[in-house]
Length: 363
Image (cartoon, rainbow, N blue to C red; front, side, top):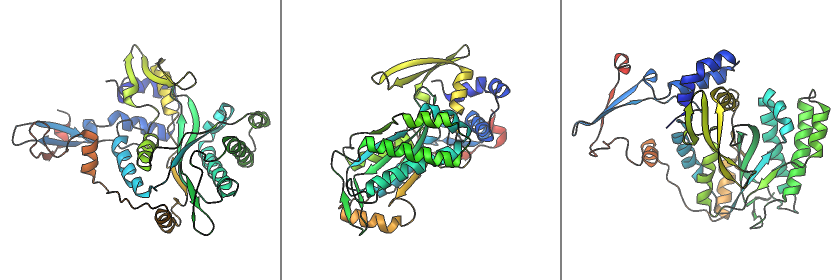
């Protein structure tokens, strides 16, 4: 299987010579190139029973590496299950017009923060309106910057429980098949974001602002999830996803990369795209976030401030009594690998982990 690592190892040097990369982009490239190789060290798994032995090299743990997100995702999912409520959940997606893409890319930290703020204030202000709910929400928002074809496409996914706490601390359920009106969400989100953008970046062209005001912004509210247990598993697909996973890459040949993608504008059809290796890497590194930027955020009664008390109140009133067990790292690895990492895959006996010294790493 061709991986992003293979592409960077073969064509990365030429790409760096042609393009100016930020520190974070260079850091991501170097980490992915070295991930699970002898350069990062590791250990030797040995079975004293059947003679099985295999070197296991360390992961780079870079958040933009396609190989390093599985364990992080499972840990996050396991922790978030403890915050689930026994209610329906909605998946709401907020997208900005393509005319703003250049502004976003040139001012990433500012624009991404404005996007989070606009989404949060839009949802909370409408939810506080007694006409719709009359309560404060608690939700998780995840920033994505790509589409399936790797083009730059900033948008936010929100997972929102169907209800909230009113001013008296009493839980109020929203309508079962209806969260908030999409047209109202869209109009409020558009006005709020553009007002904040003009204040934060007054240099943005008035023509761009006017064009965006004249458009209908895309806010998509998907049907409610079947049950709370499915919510976090579903959200895990979004929280730790990178621009492209290795299993979507089909081939790398003659300076070109071919990968699968899904065209949502054409009936959700799966298609195949071939790009030059240079263009593939250019698109991939567009989605490396600024240093320290948090792409997963919790709001309302799920925010860190007051979460302990508010979540306990929500669980009591929604009859949420199921307690999820926090799994160990070994348990999570077993879930990913389909076997215990500490036992021999051939005979099932315990493995001995021997450190690989630097001279042995390059054998």
